[in-house]
Length: 125
Image (tube, rainbow, N blue to C red; front, side):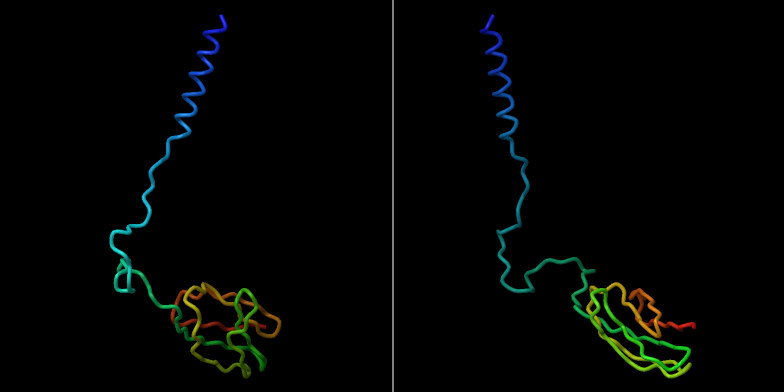
């Protein structure tokens, strides 16, 4: 009676051991052709190599006051004085990874998406 139980337990342990020993194959990087320079890299044609980009901002206030453009960590990228209702235009070079920037003016904060080469914004009182 004990023999079939031991046989069953042994068979289960062997089965579990063999299943857990199976390794799924996942190929690593191709080392048959070593990369020696950037020309050896294979990247999609759509890959953008730029690390920064220029965006033109057109900002208009409602009275004279300081305007600041800051990133999500609070780093100031641009600071200027808006004069009354005159449009203020400038070009700003920003890191390519930035997706939005916060514009501060007279107690207002506005997040602007950086998805176009030219961005206009008019502040309202």
